[in-house]
Amino acid sequence: MYDENNIFAKILRKEIPCNIVYEDDTSLFFYDINPLFKIHVLGIPKIACKDYSDFIEKSDPSLRSQFFENIKIVLDKLDISKSGFRLVSNSGTDGGQEVPHFHVHILGGEKISAIK
Ligand code: AMP
Image (tube, rainbow, N blue to C red):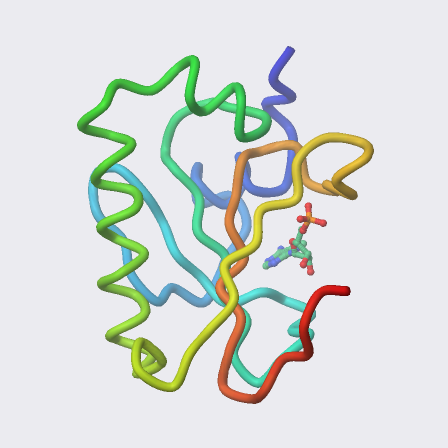
């Protein structure tokens, strides 16, 4: 079940402020409050979905494609399309997800070591 009181739900309802990078009708992209890299942006769709599987089950194809197209808009705004970046989504307990609203982390601005 989706927790309406999770932090990102509150951000979407404008109950908590955030530093917006990009927003449209479908999704919101904002700076992580505790950045792990020089650039650390979070992207969330504007539907109640707790993780990746929930997002796929509850979204229609146009929302899904718009969300991923918006990631490209954000990459260009951040000017990291060419220099490179890491796109991460932690999902569920084993994935280490802390905030139960589906989100992607856009990481960059510096060299990130390989996952091994
Ligand atoms: P995850 O572990 O994938 O669920 O990541 C949750 C992320 O949300 C962490 O990187 C937190 O630093 C970030 N975070 C938590 N609260 C806020 C907030 N109010 N504004 C921006 N980022 C936040």
